Length: 441
Image 1 (cartoon, rainbow, N blue to C red):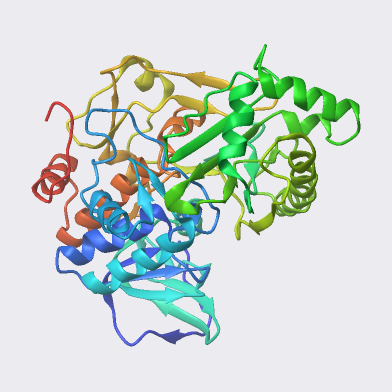
Image 2: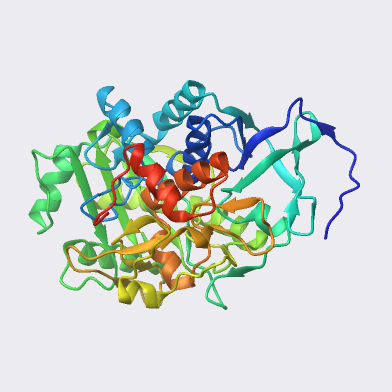
């Protein structure tokens, strides 16, 4: 029980649904609830929507690899179609992280979602398993956001934790590594493609997409030899070669390379302030070092310069709630199906670990399902949780954490909150009525 005596102002209304966190899951939750006619507010700590996809520069959206693709959410294809029409998205999951925030804001305005920027959680008053409000701090001071139903889409389960919900963190010893992404502009992409083709890596001149990666575990790999020479010459540190990955997509900036690195694998606690701060300090210096290496060793980067650092840390995994059901690695192995399923995925168990990277794939046509119960926290009856912090084991979270899955879970949470549903089968049916696609259903 927590009765808060903090003095704070009330918002001018009580909403049907309050969504805490405006990332991939939170925006879809807010849109889905508003589409059902609910009054909805989404409270976001930062000053843009999209979370990891925008502020952390996490692109592309990784495919869930089912025949339904990314369309367990009906709102995601609506968003992607709008962006493709304007040339700032392409393919299945490529998009401009800069412009995505604009389209998310447009959708919120269109559906009538009230956006509250600059609102960070201070406390969550609760009693007897019921949340009575979310106290936030903003430029106006302390305010209490009240609603009939609350959705925690913070990624770190911040609201659920403050409401007394038990959470697990990491695998007992460490979290997945964090990454502060950065981008480089002024890259000669045709010259880069020609160079990587010369060293035996794929580079399709006709494709609007470019990607290459290197890890020390990749044997007989063209980039590995170049990284080894750079380490020997003192131009790179050994850790810089643990995980290196770069992308280019015409729809996200023709001469921009987006870097899914450096990876701070030596900092192992994504819920510890000191580790998060040190990761950011380390990563910016490492990015400068990697960029100098690219200019010196890789054709196409000669006239380039660093374009941006991501605005928030890239957190793969932190807290996971205790829900009515906990999805585990056994469910991945069994390709489990559930009557209350609200999402499906064949994305691998993808555990980044500089000691031993793990990647467990499924065969074509295989998939598992995610039950609605993983979104229902034990001990908070009028709260749902959506996104990467649902009830799952460490290994299973490494599969369900990708954007299309989080968006589908967000849409399910929004529908359930707006319509007062607690039956996942009914939630899924409503998702399908809106155009969501589910294999085998």
